[in-house]
Image (cartoon, rainbow, N blue to C red; front, side):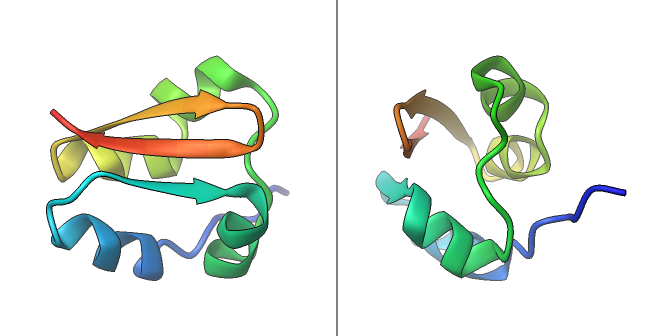
Length: 71
């Protein structure tokens, strides 16, 4: 069974309303899980992308970095 990420620390960053980036190391530290391997899944279907959308963000994945942009 896959582990679900703990999104509390990322939610706090989204509540500021500012764009931000999180690298792989920080993502693991914040959530307790690794970034999903599939780029499309991470950007569109993952729990972090769904939570980001609920705060008005989109996620763009570049190697080892998640970019959260307010839309």
